Length: 343
Image (tube, rainbow, N blue to C red; front, side):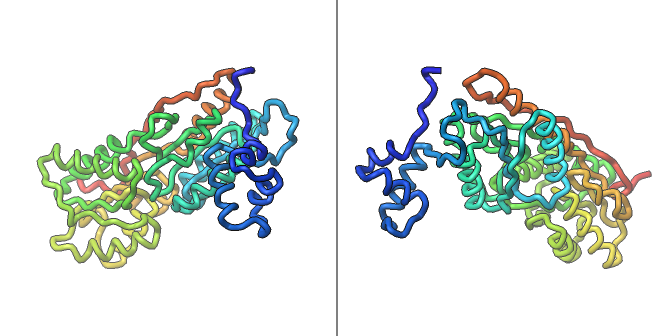
């Protein structure tokens, strides 16, 4: 126990800044009696030192709160709600509570969420990064305090964290290869501009399949948007105007794929005869659209369970070193009518 890192107090901050502890306390609370400049100095030092305001009993020796933080890009996707269901199932049985927040695809909000989780003294953190998160330094403070962080789905390049994901590149290659095997030669790809692994890896898989088939990559066949339902309709317009029109479309998620199919069908384009379609995620909507959508099954519930089990097993162990490994889960191509041009 003797080598455990000492918790930083307001007295430590006061000593370093050469001001009173009362001023530090007021500054951290944003009190107007403390000048803006001093407030900034206090907050900057507090952040760099890993100071946490103590919302809990100060005499708790081990400071466990039995609370786990979860930060996701958004809650309104089937995949993410499946992940959270899996997490809650495991956490509840183990006696842990969850604090869930969404970054709304914004790295600034993600940083604020991480700070809130840190100040609420979560025992561990599960994170899927925002589109525009180009680094993960805002999670280093958790590492310094030996608070485990596990990333899932959208993960950083950093070697210091455990990551749980599927092989996006391999899955995308499989979906694109299937369209090629159905006779498609001019395949469009709808994706998102992202600094994250997920969409970059799916793009690479698409390129790999074209390359293996001896087809030159054509950037004019790439449609970038935010992969929302509305964006799918807009993409349908762009695809119709391409000359010649694509004979296949691989979309990086099902939601956008379904609305793109609907937009094209409304314009009299037959699926799969004129354009074959493949999506990604196996959302329930893929089985509602006619024809049913070919897609990649991405097991959200199992990913949530696995991430939470890993985190809790670390918390229940006596280990003081955080585990750093990458766990790749299995995914599979589900072939349905939207891509079957050959019987």
